[in-house]
Length: 76
Image 1 (cartoon, helix red, strand yellow):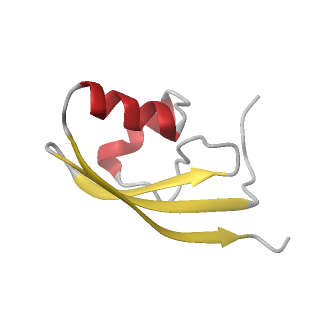
Image 2 (image 1 turned 45 degrees about the horizontal axis):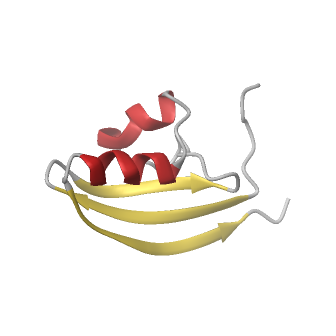
């Protein structure tokens, strides 16, 4: 099943030893391919949850910080 429409999206700023960029997360907790920086697009292609992405960077000891930026809700 392919997720096409997102009703709620949360934006995070993820800072790691490798990259520092924005990650968009859909209402189900998956990394959303739109509004996600290209350096984190691999997680969206693998249909990875944001918590799994954070755990991956924590396990590699690459995670520096993660900040919640905004929550967008689609009225339609």
